[in-house]
Amino acid sequence: MSLPWDANENQEVVETEYRPFRCPSMREGNGAAINLTSYVGVAGIGQDAAALPLGDKRCGFFGYERKIRMPDDIKDGTSHTLVVIETGRDNGPWARGGSATVRGLDSDELPYIGAGRQFGGHSASRGTFRGSEEAVQAALADGSTRIIGRSIDPRILEALATIAGGEEIPKDY
Image (cartoon, rainbow, N blue to C red; front, top):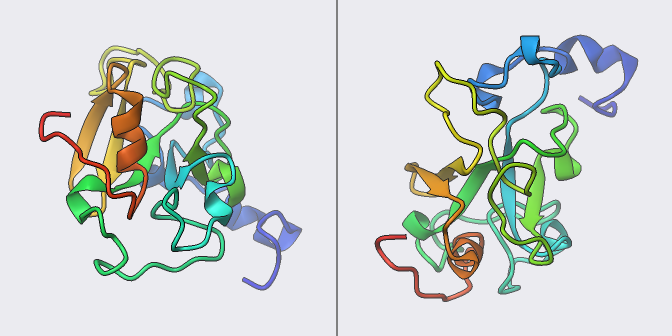
């Protein structure tokens, strides 16, 4: 535990598949390494979101140095706060940290969701419950999950990505 994630002594563990970290449609046989994660922690808004201090309005659930208290620090409400979201881009080993496991929404790259976008599925393979690259699985701070489609208004996804932005989120997003 005191060594870097990629130290030789950690390789046996790092190369282990942890299925909860992977979308069921992301299988070893499709060329992906078994230790990649399909889900990233939501850091907030901006490429620098993981480094933001807790009081910043762009701050999300995860960050490199910040710690949040549930539910006190989640001013927007746990049912309106994204914790993790699926991605098929720039996936990395679950043990790596950094952008392989925690990211902010980059508003310079819209739309956020879709094939090849910041957040999107791995394949449109049939025979799995994931049938589209145009929607993603997401988990919220209240423990619920949602499928979020490409057509979501970017401002609503950004509002969901923060813990205390104070934005209004419609019930039918």
